[in-house]
Length: 243
Image (cartoon, rainbow, N blue to C red; front, side):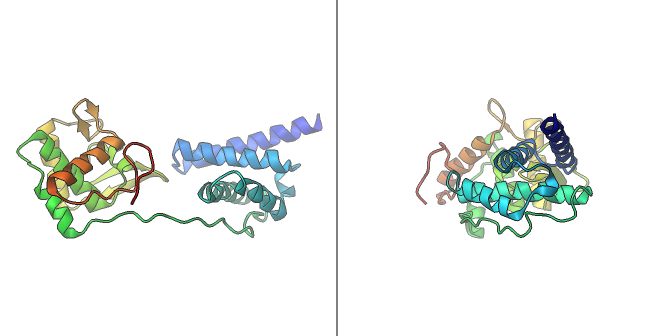
């Protein structure tokens, strides 16, 4: 009976943690991963209650993950635990964070490829704005290079706030407001009028809303037209590609 009460108490904290993450605007996938990693730690360490968790238990858990997962994934699992324990401290459930003294796992980040200003100009000049496809591609490329948004953020865009030259995007860490330069906003306006986009998703393709892979293919085709090297760290077909 005692173990059941403990389990119910932890489940209640997990539910409160989930609610806190939602209130902070994190994406559902990120929330799901954080909850999975916290529960995975609880199954591994089997602490009686949050107050009984020690840094040594967390270190042993991290060591066990290193034999199964990539350094990046282990790092993300640690971030989930840190967020959980900081939540407990903020809520008064704990006085100290047991994960604070545990060093984060390091991993190597592959740098994003960059285009020169001359290459960007060639890409924009290669878009025939007299055609529907050209005016859309010009707007998409303008937004990508003006704002630095990822493909997934770009396809999440709705109709911009024309007066404030900005739009909300749904990114990896939640929603954020992205500002546009005047030339980019003009390019988006030209596209929206040409494609008769007045509400809903901003970016459209031949058969419906543009997808992330559609954006990557769009840039790839435009690079070929402009005779500019296609620089992308995300493979179009899901398989590793040589740099």
